Length: 150
Image (cartoon, rainbow, N blue to C red; front, side):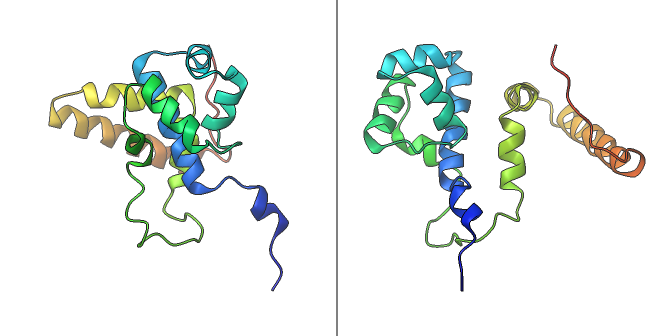
């Protein structure tokens, strides 16, 4: 059985998750890529590559990053689940879609602001609104909606 050469080029799901967690923590603290890069002796382009999982983060850099972002190394792995239960297959559960969404400015803003809505009833209504809008988009729009930058 031959291996698909494009499969080797795709980022590892764990690297994608770690990159997303780096970005989320950096944004949460209001730290720019440049500032984080300076703190750990890298270029901002390298931070971008880590966040997009184009490059893997070494253990030593992850340690430095955790220190610079005032968190534990374990923070970057939270949400992955038990390694013994994880399959090596495709992520049909939508993790790639979620990851890609959270890498957009709108995704990050929504992920940051939604937990600040404290009233459960309001949160439920917001979720219902988004669900309805997504269902309407599927029925009426032949092309996916493109988010515009300001």
